[in-house]
Structure formats: C-alpha cells, structure tokens
Length: 110
Image (cartoon, rainbow, N blue to C red; front, side, top):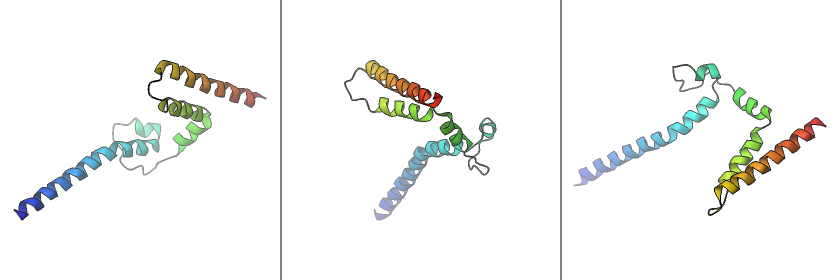
C-alpha cells in the first residue's frame, strides 16, 4: 500500500508541474515577445529566447505620450465598484482621460 501512495504522490506532483508550466507559459510568452522586434514577431519561426532582444517597444510606448493616460483608463475601468452602471462608469473614465490628455497637450503647446 505504501508503494501506491508514493506513486500517486509522484503522479500528482508531475501533474502539478505540468499545470504550473501551462499556466506560466503565456505570461512568459508575452514578456518574451515584448523584447522582440516586429520583424521577428511576424516571422513563422517561434523565438523562445530573445537572444537579440531590444527594449525599443518599451521606449516607443513611453515616448508616444499616451501610454500613461491609457494605463490610467485601464486602471479606472478595472477599479469600478460593483453595481455601478458600466456604461456610465466608462463614460466618466473616458471623459477624465480625455480631459487629462487635452490638458497635457495644451501644456505642451505653451
């Protein structure tokens, strides 16, 4: 009986490792892809380790100037309390993001 318990525990451990890898792989793939150039991303050959990775995607997103307003909108939509009319909450968040964007553009102009 002891032998069956060890074998069962081993199988559950292997199953747990497989499930953990299946859960973590999409997160790894997103992070890995963020360091690849567009040409490498559009190729048919998958790249599992970014040997010639670049941070140009991050610098491009931050230099664009709209990243933080979009991030604020995402956080705002995600933090809406339950029971709130989703359309109304979305309008409030979008209006606040638009106001912040126009204020930022006006500040940049002079």
